[in-house]
Length: 289
Image (cartoon, rainbow, N blue to C red; front, side, top):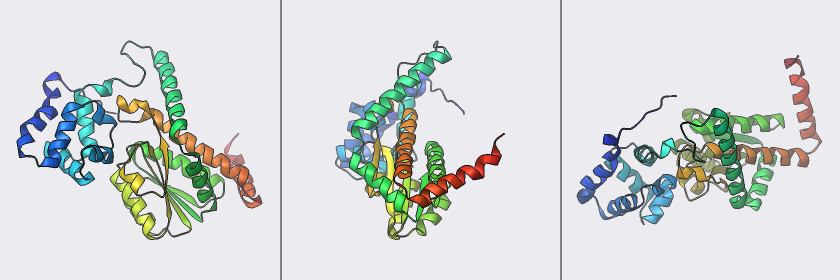
């Protein structure tokens, strides 16, 4: 992993660029600029849809504003701002450079615990129940994830496969589009995106809906494009987004949601599903000493 350190002379480049281009902006873009300049730290925890709502404009306007400033999109703009204000160097519970690795381990445990408690407070019980039942009854389950979310998608599909479900994970954006285009009313498409703004994941869910598939998203709490593309939204919540946009602790919350769904299906399954679990264990017996 390559870590880039931004010097003080680079730190004011984005803010300076916003100010220098301000006069050439339209009214909506000026509202975005005003918001960012007034609450630079707060922008890091905003999704593109949340910022658009705060500034009374469309998601496309936020993306266009980001490109005007010199970034590929809103996510890239957030990364740039996070680096400039030094927020990427502060992760969770005041981790310091002179902390021993075990001290960092204990602080990460604390962060994860807080993330799980926060997720419990905002996760809708009815939506979780509905998601579990929908997955359990589906003829086919496709789980989409990219980047940080790819490992979560693979773990979820692995769990569902053990239950005998026809489940697959896909972490390639071209294959996601292909798979989504073949899903039907008996299928479930699950999109995982901490930011809720991953273009390919959102598009995969939209393509899935065309064939009638039920769409489920697992994302950080708040309005975002992935929520708009989903029939059922399962939210995580992590305060770490105030310090970092990586969503590290939220991954544990995502895994816990899928663990809960897996366990729900196990205890509510018919004999065929129980047999499938048994067959899985038998098939794996020879893989261990």
